[in-house]
Length: 434
Ligand SMILES: *Cc1c(COP(=O)(O)O)cnc(C)c1O
Image: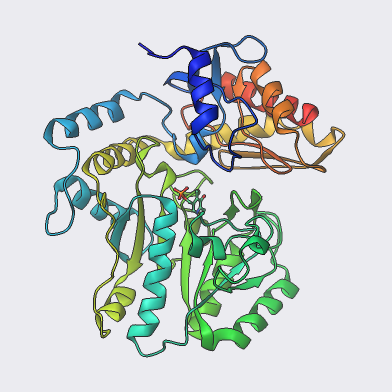
């Protein structure tokens, strides 16, 4: 039973609690969630429109692919809790973490081989960058320490990941002199099915040629750029990156923290291109949205390079590294995903979003509508009125969290057809209101 009245809870929240990307004190009253089950969030008080339950269109930021309170995942946590919730990972190991690492190596593209378990996506990206810089240091090329990415990306909120986020979206102007100065190419041309733009390829080639001597790695989100703008590009650009990185001796990092585990219609977005990176980051849906855990995978070549250095270790070790509860639920989540025809479920959601958003592109104020896998995006021609858009969605009985000029959804894979239709209607209502 809740101990605080909703009013008290909201007053304390406003007085003391930071929320993501929020001011202090907060200016917008958040919904209080009492519980969550299946694809529904149960609120402590009715939202705009009188709904006490909202269909979740966000999967809690790409994470809850199986919905909430899934019996198999609940049981995995309970079972592990009976053994141990946590032990340190230095000098100790345990089955949940070892099984998880072995599974990740098995299901990710060859030749990824070694796994570093981190406690959040941003840390996984930090570790990926550290691996790349240390690799070049160890093999005697310490001048190779810059990163190249394309604009429109998002890689996390800690400082080094922030340095490869889109300079505008990441507000780099606030951090002059603090952020490392990375190299940016133009945004990849839009469209999953669009043919490669020769001019873009040539410009990218030229940029790499000019800077190869100082580049440690290229880091990108493959196929889907998430929080940097919800844009899709052709898998052909990943083949371009692989080819250029090989030609110029530069490592390739795929940040699949948002795209991993089926979201874009392939198990990993890299699979759309048949390309393997040297380093790959996973997170978000890794634990089915239950607990915070992320992973950085690398090839034997990267690990061997690091081992040849004067400091032959990777100096990173979070306190909660390999957390057994998180690893156990990650194992259960992956088994649950792979044990079903997930690709058909994602296709079904894609079809439902395409149908439900078919007429939205013609609405005034709408610039673009795009759908890929279980991701639906409506881009406006103006910044969204977040409060109005959120309330419009709630009136349709749906939880959405728009940002910038974007109203978007990535529902849990277990969302039924009627609920997918409802989400699409809510996205459209939010686009009209916002
Ligand atoms: C969310 C995200 C991150 C950061 O993950 P956190 O767990 O929030 O630190 C990094 N990269 C991508 C592509 C993401 O979507």
